[in-house]
Image (cartoon, rainbow, N blue to C red; front, side):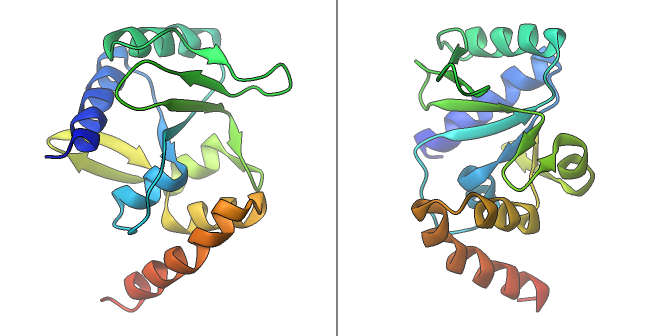
Length: 155
């Protein structure tokens, strides 16, 4: 098991222990589903409630990271740094106006070394990256669309 996989299992355990409902989104969600892409961090989507923010702090502590910190006064995104990999936490929705509830309804339950995580569907990842329109997202879209075609054709 790679160090990235070990950290993902550790993160999944911490999330489970804290009873925090999260959806893995972004490039890591695509990689977990077999996309041959790389990412620098793990993006999580949660509902923004005081209770969930407390649970998030517990997750950070359990993975040996610093408390969640805002990345900017202009953003609601928080980062958890100091663990084996940076974790960015988004609240309530991602690019494309995709809400937690809509993503949750289509999310895939993935087992990683016996730990379960909800992962955004490939369709939702593609929709979000298309809406974001950043160069790094645009570079990944052809790969994600090919994976989607392969899955839809049963390959």
